[in-house]
Length: 86
Image (tube, rainbow, N blue to C red; front, top):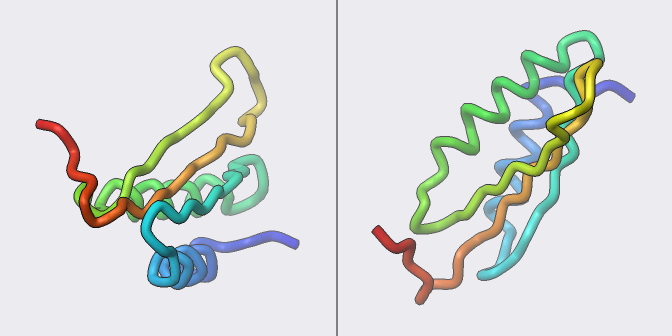
């Protein structure tokens, strides 16, 4: 199965709406398939725009691998009392 940017973004947005405080979703992002880089770029643009007061986003990736290794995105919904420090 190969995913695409529109369906991935629709699914991610739906999950974000259903996350409870401190809820976490993990996304493994593969860029090596046809259209994979476009999908990753759309996903990256989306997560960068998430309100930092509502969500935390972490990227975990290989730094010494070649051939477009996958990377992990973690999106966590903040608890209402958690606020980022300035």
